Amino acid sequence: MKNLLCCVLALSFFLVEADKESLRRASFKTFEDHFKNGAHNPEFDHLAILGSKRTEEEFDELEPEESKARLAKLIPKMDLDKDGKLCLPELQSWVFNSYKSLDNEEAKDEFKSADADENGKITWDEYLKKVYSYTTKDFDEMKKRSAEEMKAIERMIDEDKEKFNVADLDKDGALTIQEFPAFVHPHDYEYMHELEIKHALKDHDKNKDGKIDLSEYRTESSGQDDKTERLAEEAKFKDYDVDKNGLLDTKEMKAWILPNTMQNAKEEAEHLINEADLDHDQLLTEKEYLLLFPFLPSPPPTFLFFSIFSSSI
Figure 1 (tube, rainbow, N blue to C red):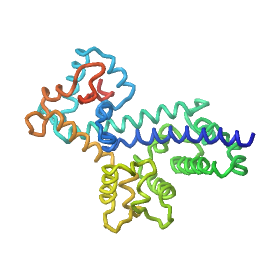
Figure 2 (figure 1 turned 90 degrees about the horizontal axis):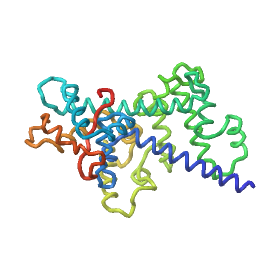
Figure 3 (figure 1 turned 180 degrees about the vertical axis):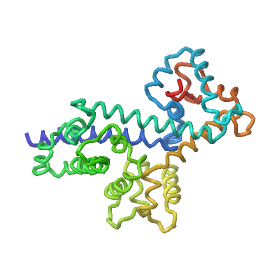
Figure 4 (figure 1 turned 60 degrees about the vertical axis):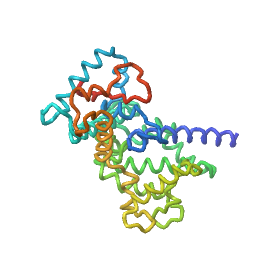
């Protein structure tokens, strides 16, 4: 019976780990995610302008002419200087707001799901029960007698509790809808950064020297046998290693662990312009902008699919 319990708990851990990793990756929206393993991800562009997964689903159901009409209406909203063309700063601003909108949408969905008593606040007990299926008492008892293989889930819960406490700005033991986004998307909130770096060190700093070397930087899931991916990892590590001493200190880790949303928005905007700028003037006219769209419910994966920012529909 004890072995069966451990197996059940282990399975729960892997399911929770996968779900949390999926949320983390979705919230980071890095340029590496755009071209994962060298393959272009069209949904990245779609959501980068849409700013809402729900609106994305709605948009995919529209007739081509309706899609085109809605897209045309966006141009004046994106064109901040009203010159009839879209420049890099205008697209960057739009994409940045889309990323923020996506994070807020995810946070609101998570909040609604976890607020069991629907009182507008989430206590630690509510979150623990919703995400991990434990009560506080159950978790405390598990920590007293759990097997060694369950230490990982204990650490994950303990780290979430730390993060919960930092996000709880008024220290009332609960998170409001205003506080919860920092808990779900800590990379967007400066006061959460120190704790995120601390947790990253705990995960990666195997020799406990307070810094990250190249071997620690590489994840177990990375393609160690893939030379191209290995070289790309090494190049990225060198970019983060500002003082070129072969180690990432906590300051250098920030660019790795806590991606710059504005910089990511700029890289995405540059990509969109490169895809549609037929005359190479680094501006998008209305004609060029509309050429980005296939106006089909299910566009071919090799064709850039561009969508719209939900708040402007």
